[in-house]
Length: 534
Image 1 (spheres, rainbow, N blue to C red):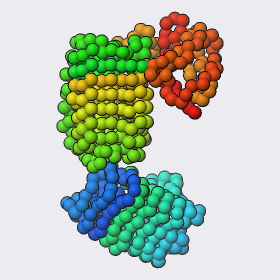
Image 2 (cartoon, one colour):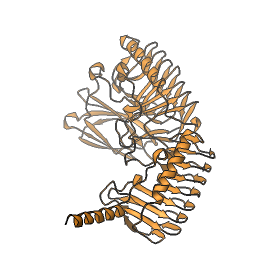
Image 3 (spheres, one colour):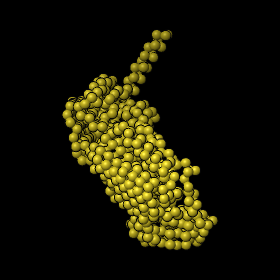
Image 4 (cartoon, one colour):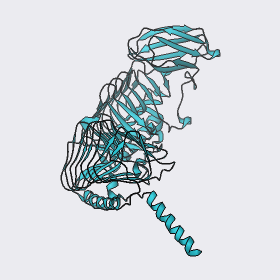
């Protein structure tokens, strides 16, 4: 009886091992988004890559800023090449339990397991990988020839399936057509990999021997499956700096137009002028005082802390910063004057405590409407910019994080916004019709709030953006309020008494950013920003 049970158990184990595929050990190769053990790795166009890029025998060419480290024939690539051989052998020896037709997709749904195709294969339309409710479900595809896709083909993951548990072992050329959406780690054996324009890959493209060529693609190393959770570096202790939104240790602070600021404003060696108390939730330090002296000392310490942080990733093309570049929690360095063109995304990978530090050894400027966008739990309070030079945020730029300029002036031009702080160790600061809201960190007892500014909003202003009609809804007790609207240059464009709980106001304003002020009869003031669209 015991022997019969042992036999049944052995059969069950064999069946289980056959059905449930086992992921290979990628080792050092897991750090790479694109890699060849022996072959060139090249790019054309604008590609967005998260993960290291390199080759152990060849060169990596024509890549822009990469959210990873570039490696050519160094210790890291040698280790990765050895690890890739091991991973390939593990996949090659995996016992298949499914034998699909060579044409994958067209609405097909597959469950976890090892799939073997004894010839070349093609992906067309949609292929769905169903994890069966488990994030541990592994999918292995063993293709004994080339692998290609039709334009727009896609792999979808459902029911807990993760890209980090999907593997494609291909014995031939991998050629993914334009706009293919692919999932998983691709290992081409003794053959090249081509990712055409618009292809997106949540995974890796790796070749044992062969060139890897990409053109205007998005490749992001998958997360999960025990991969390291990125936290970024330790962040500095701001102390009194946390209560200042606009500050310089040495220089004037001047404003023109209507600027809305939450947090203190001041200079430790210079005058602060042009700000209206009704638009500032905090203290305007018109002249240097004890508070500004303490802030100057704390700011010097914060700068020193950021300046000495070790660099994880160097972004090699400072003049081409932005352009939809995605950054993950790390310490980055740019070693020349930097221009933010378009958008840079900060992706916390669902870790709300993740820290981003961007260190620029030169000036920072932005294009008009440039923006810093937070993704997947990223918070402005955890973002820090250390800039050794002047800072210029161009018209309507939208910024996130604490900006610390060292020995350089800071200009925030008309309509620019920041969720964070603009600080300079030494240099004048000039603002023109901006919106600056400090992030968390200030002890409320140390932030002197103007009595003219109410602590909670009592009016709703919508829609925002608006076209021709702006609605203002007041609390019942705040009827008979005065509404004033200014353009970004500070010129008043509307003044109106609001006598109803809900007022619908016809407006014919040029497209752009405007600021409103609602003052109730008891002296409370609410301010905010609205946008007029064409």
